[in-house]
Image (cartoon, rainbow, N blue to C red; front, top):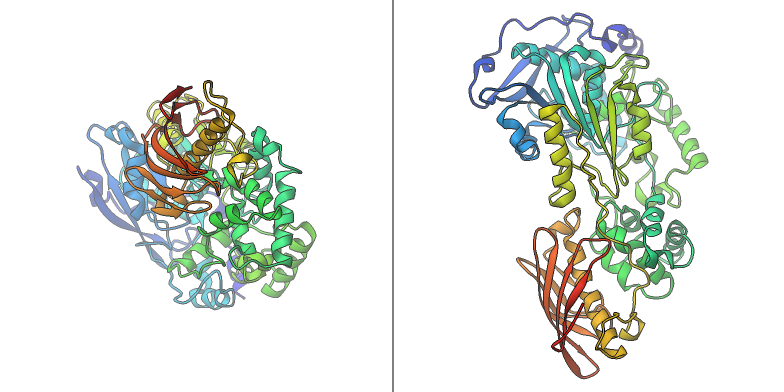
Length: 585
């Protein structure tokens, strides 16, 4: 009955039609400073007499504004808590543009359905949550949220707006563009969701070992390792499954294969190769950052999340099939296609119901975020796509062709949420974003996250390190110099401005001994990158990546005084300094 009743609501849900206009201007419309408020909207926009929901928003007007930016940073999650981050990202844009942020229905202050105790890691709880939420769960979707947004736009008396969306925010932007093309003057998409032919969004559950191949292929040292990077990783997974290691779980390796974290991109392939050759230290060091199994899920907004994910997404099962048949279809898909290869589902998730949680969430209503064939506005659209995002730049480009004036800019070695991180890449993307929202012009600044090269074989002793080509030094001294620099570079790599795992690490054991402390300086205390060399001293690292180190290197009963200066985050770091007072460059 639920499927039949909700399935009747189709045509009006796809296109804007004639939504009921707001009763009058909202009190925030005349505000001169931030104004937080809400509007009432129908649960089902095609049925004006349906249950009412309260949708909350923040309105931040600019003095003498010449336009308005609507922003959503993704999730799907509450949006109002992200206002400070949005303001940081947009920066000077907000001197002349108003900012409008709406909590999507079902999240935060916008009538969230609550299901205490429900978690994506507990698929048996999802069906109970869906039953508790009832038929209205089919209306926590991007098509309905787009109607909410336009009602809010009209309540504030706004004309055309620009939309800045990141991640799931790009889906909201595309849904809004499909229904209200005349209400937009520009769209900026960061890390865009990809739409399938049926108008629903892809939720790819896949392991992307090709990213390891891409990073390794750009490095002479990594390329010299035997076999392909993806093949080495597959052998590592097989080894750990056959011979479990209490310090490295198979689950942990699934996270370590994600090269959007620069340290993982730099070291994972070489660490896997070392492990298979009997040197577990590099891989075990990386694994310490990752929990050994999927952490418990305790998101209080899980019902709203499932409403959007399931109502907006496309999956390897029939949307209208009962749960048992959905599960059978999903199992057959994962057995046939193996998108998680070399992993099995249970290596990463408790079961099929966790990797595909929408199996147990009914989706009776036809609600594609971007209906097939729907004309999209011919406004300027700028799309930033990183190599290491969930969706490849090529897939993103194919998806956004539906926008007549879309420009897609690939960011080499770029991660998800390109406009977020500090450092040169984030600054560059934010610069393009700000220029675009201000002028509607695309100023490609060559943004890139490619600021490192993957390492090759991990040395275990000084004699394993190729000597530095410094003049005036003996071969033995040049090896000590090279090993000392490798120790310092290994430490500074953990402060790559494009990273996220290591930003919260304050100290870490050296690869083979000693301690690295990350503070105002990076301090090495007897750090052993190779077993027979101890390195101590401070490394100063400037925001632009200039590193200087004053170090003491001890090996073979001798102590050497070494100073180093280099560019830490570069594909070709230039090194100069002194070795026992002898200068080199």
